[in-house]
Amino acid sequence: MKIPQIPTVQTISHFTPSLYEAALRCKALAIWSAFGERNTLPQSSNAILGSCFHKVLELANKGQFPQDKKACYDTARQVFEEQVQLQYQNAHPLLKSKFRSIDRLPYYYLFRERAALHATDIALQKQPSTSPGISKPSGGAEVSLVSRDGLIQGRPDYINVAESEVIDYKSGTKAEVVGTELSGSEIRQLRLYAHLCLENDIQISKGSIVRGNNQHATLTISHEDARTEGAAARVLLAELNAAAAHQTFTEMAEPSPENCKGCSCIPLCEAFWEQATPEWANECGLHLEAEAVEPPSPSINSASRVITLQTNAIRGTFSPAQVTIQQIPENWLMLDGENLPEVGDVIRLINAKVTNSGSSSVVGVDKFSTSIWMV
Image (cartoon, rainbow, N blue to C red):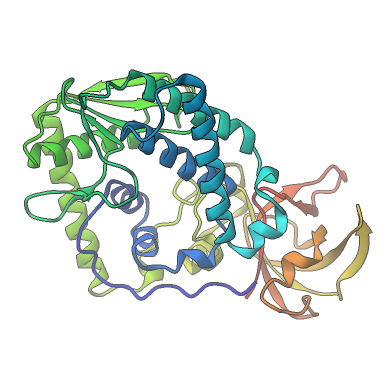
């Protein structure tokens, strides 16, 4: 696959909670999130399943499922399957090459059951004649909440007016930070949603994260907390736009082991490759830019063609100078109609896997997370 094009740097008109988080982490990531061609990077299967999980809960909160328990459960499962199938059809070719059908996606059945059980619980609490709140889906036709100055926008998953509570659903079952009920990003998200509600004359005094196992983590939010978060977001938006007026994408990047952990921009982020060192590997994974020094060596593994590639490392988080990359599925390298790497070609290997070969200079690929790019 060819490295995606970096987006043209331009100013961002407004922040959503997700753009706010991206900008706190790295201004270049915010530019990519706002303007990059994100379909040129492979989606994670968890991102697809999580999005469909949210869609099912959105429909449950809008009262669109039957109130009979079994009928609701069956309908929620069916909707989840339909949503996953739709997103799978539009997914990146690498993901479809790795997982040939939706039920091959890792944790597909687990996410489906969580969505169905959670949606059933929500639907059975609904009263046909009343609406306890305002549903603001993560996607769909409803209008987003917009701050009075237009600089902050967002769509909370659910606003319970009766309880003065804003709710965000998470498909996972644990906080991002071990030992905490709410991560820093979750607290900021809830406070920013509360700010948007208050700007739209909806009174909010608390926010809750509801996880995939139906566990609730609730945060008391004062008006001052909400205003402070809104003000912080506006300051960061102004700083980002000031930088965008005179900096390149690479100059706006803020690479570090913490910021680059799990970042989708690594294949195309020149700043990462300029600054990354082997000491970053424990925090953000094994990533390697390397030159092929021998023709690919093909073999057959479980009826699939795989290749081994001998390379000289150039940059990244891997320390040996000579690196052998084993068991690369041939079709991963030829999705764009490209030929296999030739001697002298430079590749970027993202999320390599340590093998059990006993040699520190041998790495493999991980079906769940690895991608390989031609530079």
